[in-house]
Length: 65
Image (cartoon, rainbow, N blue to C red; front, side):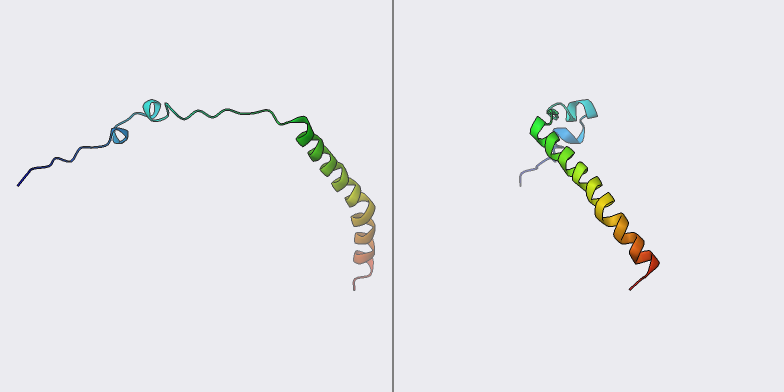
């Protein structure tokens, strides 16, 4: 019968610095057109809230269905 010894994996004993050696996270700049899409979205959201939600909210509060 052969005797086999349990060998721990290297990551079991590794320090956080050694463990995170290959974990590199690189941030990227947001392209200008994505920023433009977000700006358009928020402009539309504010316009919609002012033009439609507030006037309808007043009539709903004063005379509920």
